[in-house]
Length: 151
Image 1 (cartoon, rainbow, N blue to C red):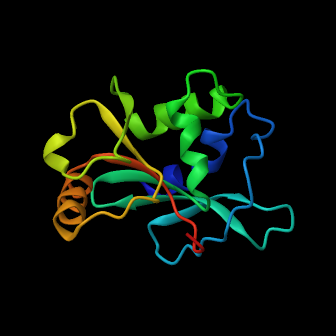
Image 2 (image 1 turned 90 degrees about the vertical axis):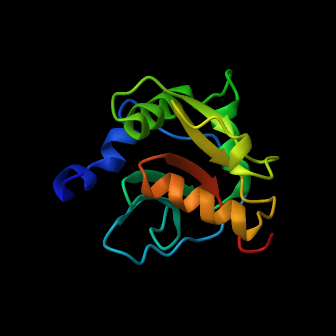
């Protein structure tokens, strides 16, 4: 994805979206690479709450709160327009759907074709799982995950 297109990710994800429902107290993410863009900040702009990143050939969204990922697995979320925008951006025009990997112990158990993986970041994954997930992302898979520094 070209930088100028990647720079528009926030506008793409929030097209037609005025706000997101409040689902807790997020932490702060620190976007540190050239392949990361801030998507959403707190009101004072000091806390980055959502980032988009390119990893290999993949597109990923990272939320600074584990519970934020649940909106992608709930068909009746208040944030449906945001969820649909995220789906369209991550899918890059392909027919795809969300798939939770929260309770999955092995990437061998994950249907990868046509899926955007959702991981709340709470469940620890072993080294083999993480290696397989990295390979999946390097090959162009998509991921939405949550991360909270305090657990």
